[in-house]
Length: 390
Image 1: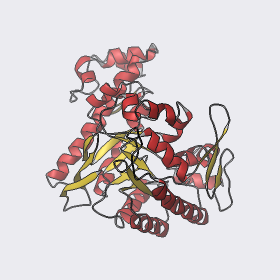
Image 2: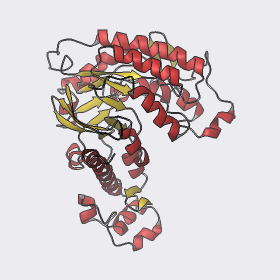
Image 3: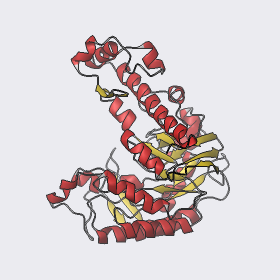
Image 4: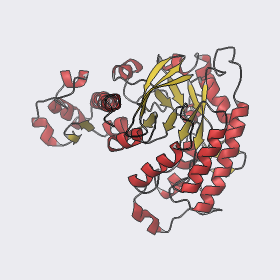
């Protein structure tokens, strides 16, 4: 993998770059849609490509559960398995340490409302999630499928990701919950740093007989440290000192958007300028410009697809809930300014009807439009960087 920065903003840390992989070149900054189980839900790979999506990210933990990395490897790797011709990322499984652990126990996501701390659910040193076991050498999970005990540590994560064969893979880490106190976060950070070194050692230097893994597969280290400035800076410095091909910024992002923006600036200031930076799991429309101005090159987010499956379309008018009966009287495109195939060929009244009739085609149409809308939005931000406007 090669990364070339073609333009840097004079007004912010934003930059235009070209990320070259064996499956094509990505112009950054860009959105990375989520293909959790080797599919962007409701769409074929060909349809996803038509939305201007340049790269996708799949989920190591879920693909390990089903169909299993050996099945994917036998098929020739994820690209052949899902018929995706462009670049791919796989996460490490570290997010499931949070989502199946404290996230599940406390019913929280990466960001929480500021008043949630009053609930007395703070995660302190010594706290243990109910459904997983976090140890020094890795994490014991219970399979959501059959309850069988599974173990994933840094070596296991890298081995799975090499068999899956994505262009970019991530080091195994512990994604801490937003309610974690300083001592818990500090202790977790030491584990993540130790696992980062193990991941680098575990990564194969030579591709397998099937051509998967090896030097063409880039490995990103992940910066953690929660909302604590000194821990974020410590983590960024440490991960930056290791021989990673790029860097992920992970974990929780505080209880408001201001803290998230500050945290990104703390981290980016410590990372090598010439290597790519990926923000894990954040990408709402209102966040994108600030994320990019902070110096992030790529970022993955489920928002466009997750909302689409609930009947929500993103448009220049704002978010539209097409489940509402008022749209049965709207004989117009989802967005009059959009030229995606859905907006050119289908109207709000029809999509509203499909939703109310429980027809799954509605989900496909809105998903396609939302991905187009998000990708066009990021394309506009790239244009602003090129013009020197941000």
